[in-house]
Each structure stands twice: as C-alpha cells, then as structure tokens.
Image 1 (cartoon, one colour):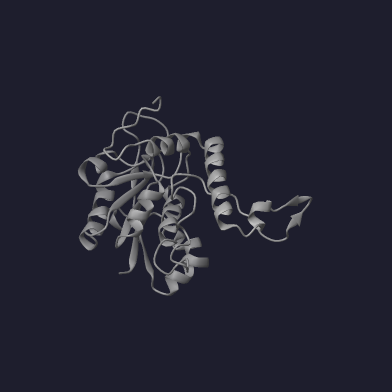
Image 2 (cartoon, rainbow, N blue to C red):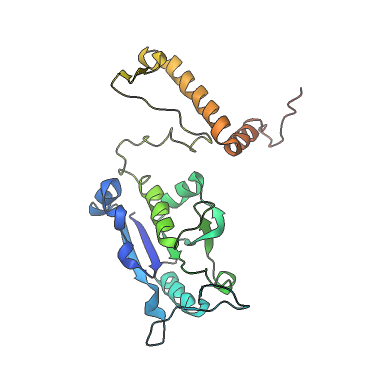
Length: 245
C-alpha cells in the first residue's frame, strides 16, 4: 500500500516543496508515497476564478466560499473515498503523535488548505471534514501546516527512516519529551558527555534517560507531564487510584 496525499490549495506549486528532499524526497522517488496537489480555483465558475468573498456581518479580510470549496472537496471524495479529509485550521483539534501514527498507518490523507480569514463554516456543517491545528499561532495559509503534517506522517512509513524502531523513543511517543543526546567530541568548550553515557552500563543508561525525559517534561511541558502522570495512575479498570493511600 502506497501512502497518497491529496492537497487542495491555491498554491499547488508549494508541493512537494521541502518534502521533495531528504528522507521524504527519497521516499517519494522510491514510490513509498505520492503527492497530488490540486488547484482550488479550477472549481470556480467566473472568468477571474474567484474563490472568496467579503465576510458576512462585516469585518476585515476575505472568506473562502463554501460553494467552490464544496465542489473541490466533492471531487476529492469521489476520487478518494477511502482517506480522511482534513482541513488545516487554527480552530481545529491540535495535532498529536497518536493522530499522526493513525494517519500514517492508513492509505493516505486529503488536506484542504485554507487562506485569507478562513473558510465558510457551512462547509464543515455539510461535509465530513476534520479541522486540524498544528499549534496556537497563525500562518499565512494552510500549506505550511499541511507540509508539517505530511512530514510527520511520511517519516513513519515503512522503510523511510531505515531501522524499524528509529522513532520509538522520540518525544511524545511515550507521552514524554525525549531525553537529551550527545556525541563526539567527548569534551567541547569545557563541557563533557555525562559519565553514565560513557559507562557501557546499559541498565544505568536506560535509567538515566528515563529520569531525564521525566525531568525535562516536568519542567518544560507541565501540560504533558500532567497527562502522563494521569495516565500512569490509572488502574486496569480505568478508575484512578487514590494517591493518598
């Protein structure tokens, strides 16, 4: 099964973009994934190929029209009914590693890239589209967010990273940030590689890495730490243990 990405965008020339290089680019050349960027304006009906209009109720900017996007989305659904349809939007559910893994395990994904002030909400009411956000900040459009989502998926495809377990210990895979890394030279600007990593004691190294992952997560991402601790104290029945016992 080849992972196939279909992107609805006003700027199809942005794809594959950086995904045409490095691991993703090699995987694309090897046929491990496919990229099909489609021009939304092809579904406009006027000679100017207009896709947007002024906001109902007034306000700055322009809004992408539901009728034109509806035709674009319907064409993708007709061609690819087997893949989830996502829309990159700051109003969407935050993307996480669990969702990335589920997408990467499937046949592919279709992604709608918004522009301007956003997309007419009626499109989301009328079609099964999953809004997805990559963070609490605003981009000029959904294309960069789509590239980020695709890169996260592509690197998990079989054979892309090389070793089958290359991503197992990375940040977020276990609910924690990843432990810090070191390599040669042994000393740099008066700083040395921690002794435990030079000890050859694999049990001690594993314990050190686990402790550092927990410490760094607690300090840098208290939100992740809280979720990790909550999951860790769940009993097999799903009931939370009483920490005071």
